[in-house]
Length: 403
Image (tube, rainbow, N blue to C red):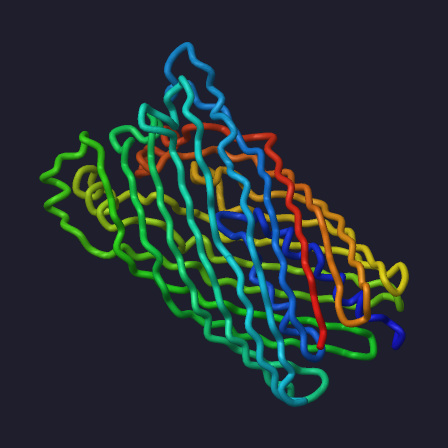
């Protein structure tokens, strides 16, 4: 297989980013390090766009009688950026930078007459933004092994507004957290067999702990004395640890198959602003969380890439995501997905390429629960709406350059 062109090898990662644009919970970018494992010196930049169509039906006890029980479409179009640089400093040492936006959310329920997720002052909304910058150092003791590690600089910020009957006495609550900075790390190993163009990599990323001041506003139904009693402290959250396992190999001089798998520890993740948790603990005897999940995420993306000629290659792939549990948060009420994708790569010259791809998602049905009622013995009452038959479509563009 010595005649296998690098075009076929690079096309194998074409749809990997698209597959995870709408993964479980807040996972968005998939945190791939494939750019760092490219041969020689290499740079790339990409963007992915997600258009999701998600809506549901409200359970009767939460809707104003006689009104339409449709939630309305509440997911906003999102764009995510990625850039990477890899330098082969010596035959044994390499260095890389990877910028991505691994976790995020952007939803806004429309104002509707049923009053479930909206009121006079607007609709329930949430936005979460993260950015990662990984500084990778690699050691290649021989042609087969690549051992690497990196400190990871991460920022996170977000805001939430709760409106409507779904949140009972907490409707009208608002929270905004300014951008916080923290450090985590990653480590991994890759093994290659050049003769058959085989490459496998295993990468672990640590959780990253954040502590920031949140500005919280409570509705008039919450006594001011109670808010004053708990005072103000910084809010804490941690983005989850994860493991990526990626494998690819050539099956003939013009065809590559690959499989990317990912595990994310969402079961230990939650969003609980300090006052929100402290006030609900005093008032209800049980602290509530704005967002929480009861399962870890597992996702699998498999594909086949083929070189048509010296300039054109294509890829087809399929993906599956387990979701992070059901019932699901009202701020992201899906339970995983199945998906299929197509992509093309064009090489105007041997040292650079352009890639484009599209992926269609069938989003898993879920029950949306309200954090206002997720306390022992009231789990069924907490189910506010049922979400089914939802879909999304993702697009990706990438440019890569070898030098």
